[in-house]
Amino acid sequence: MREALGQDPLTGEPKWLKRQRKLFTNFVNAKLMDRDISPVTNIFEDLKDGRILYALLEELSGQSLAPIGKIKKKAPLKKAETRIDHVSNLSIVFRYINQTTKITGIGPADVADGNETLILGLLWSLIVFFTARDLGGVDDVSALKKKLLRWAQKRTAKNPDVEVRNLKDSFKGGRAFLAILHDVDAEGSPYEPSAVATHNFKTAFDDAADKYGVPVLLDGDDADLWKEEQGMARARRPTREFRFRLMKRLPETSSDVAGAALAAAAAREGETRDDLVALCKVPSVVGSSACDDAARLLCHQAQLRKMAAVDVRGGFVTAAARERDPALPTVLLVGDYAVGAPVACCVEFNHWFGWS
Image (cartoon, rainbow, N blue to C red; front, side):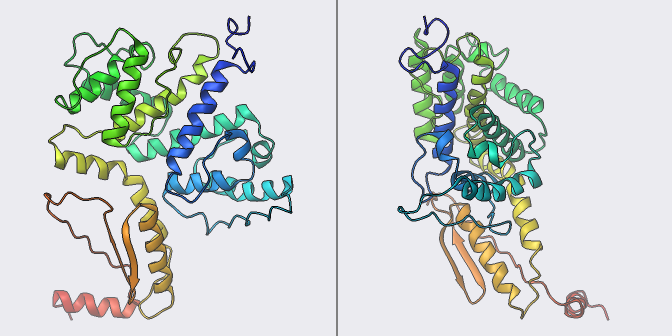
């Protein structure tokens, strides 16, 4: 009876809620895998103290939340934290959220109390906001869906047996995923669809993770992933997030190195702009201690971007790409965050252009 009503026969939990809980847990763990944080096992419980949400926002935004406030250190095992402690931490998180994403209808107390529906809505809203910013020029869910649909249609145009009419029914058999990956790398990802949807899902998800680092957010063994049933309208949302990640990470073609680099740069336009704004707020006039503050901030930004060999020497910040192909040319980027005093700037400007 429970199964017929869309409930887990063992726990009685609605299937759409179980699916979303698993998907968002996978998403959070994928974003925080490089941080020294224990993996999330229960998304509703583990977000209560504010620490996971704080770290997640730093990863999504590429910024430190320290200027807004610092989370309290975890209490010793002998001293249990109170709800007041959790709300205090979450207040810092929501201070940042209210300054950026403008999410309404949920506050620190709702997360501290483990309100499942509101927490899922919050996570989805954060994903949409930062995905739209990363993709550039997209300012709402409708525009984001249209951009994703056009991209999927372009990617699958060569496959006559795949017709992407929408983001729901057209993906439920798994063929569209296989066609997209085949379009990127025809030799490495042959288009060999199965009549079994779960086989197609698992093949595509594993391929995307192994080759392009797309987090496996969806359960390829879940035969009901696209099944039409009551409550699935909400459960379909994380499937869009998986496709957003595909669109963001897949290169234009397997040989289009320059195009892939430009696409990656365009995808990070919002993050880069925010980094520059943060640096510009530091009054780093030459000779002042603020230059050290700017250097530390730049160092922190490089670390958040997963750069390697990040170091500060004599006021200079150096960093390198964590992974690079030795067959490709090396690009050296040089930036100066020191701001000269007004008079000095005028003198230097006149010197360079020969003005008196």
